[in-house]
Image 1 (cartoon, rainbow, N blue to C red):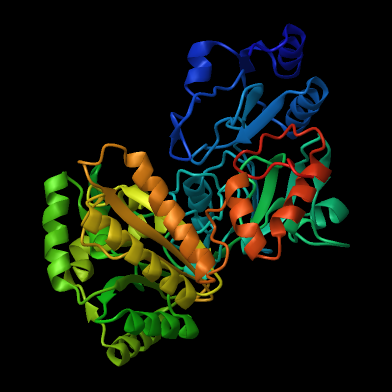
Image 2: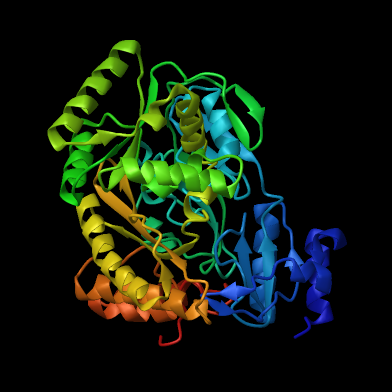
Length: 514
């Protein structure tokens, strides 16, 4: 449906005519052809590009007044399309400034379109580092815009829920709320108080994915960085590598005869707190991250790796603060591997390869290759749980469902183990079932939905908690009755802060039953 001309003219008055458009060729570029595995047909009525919090607030208030929905996003990697008609886009790409990097109090303040790689590069110049979302360094550095904000560095650098400090929030009805120390002192160092905290409102198990207003600025924690300011690179993309392995750094890969042995090693490394990164990649993911030339090279590396590993395994990256610290960490790692019967993968430790692994894992440049590789391009289920062992057993149960689909001929037997991740030294776990849909399947979307539905039922029936891929009314209604009826309270929050349902929330929750 076309927007009212006076509404469109008001948008032009707020932004200037050059920063708002309802031209079909512009609107179409923002369209997502598939939504929740179903072909999507909705398009935004117009695209807006604000450059300040005040402009965002003005757009939101205008939408409330005219009963038009809006949806905001930054880099737009995940579900940033409209769920229905009468919705405009708030594209935050002009809000791309690093506001502050506080070296003393260890935090950084960014706008939504600052990407992780950009912030990390500036932090490294100051001997600091930040957590990056696992989707890649090209995603937003604002922790509330980066979904769960889990990544390779979450072993030592936590994730979005723990890293988020003070926040500037344009509420769904157009108020500007400054949370934590920002609201009371004008400083960014704390996300809570004085008084009750709103962090549980603006971000629960996962962020609202555009369904609860707009986050225009946020601070996040920073961490010590013991490495160089830059990684000098050699070669030409995609076959490039660091000129050297940074001093006191290593990257190894270990596999184990059983899942229990791997869990034991992960928890012991976590208890010792010696690892900067620990990702339970399978052999295919390690191969994809090393291959630089073509598909056949990846297949060759994978064949070699798969014949060398004992079973499930993990990549571990250590960064020592000094030579003595580095030697200590290496000795502890070696002892843990000996106690748990781990086997190393020599090709990963080859200096020719190791520097490239270190660079790609720290800078999050290989994420799309890890999950979108030729050997298993369909990620069927994503989750997160209270501790690493619990998540591991959840994914193990889901793997049985995957095996059933392989037997039926719906999935290709890629021979790969599930992907798992240790967070906060094993205090939390994340996992994904990676599956390649067979080319003979007539309706691949049905298979994808079967994987998701089967995984959800396993999480509920076997009491693994609410995973981090739960968004939309349907999924909240599925999980809520099994988790203290949280969906009822979530809808009350939505209704309270968004009485006009202006903030499009098909990927969050609606207030339909309130």
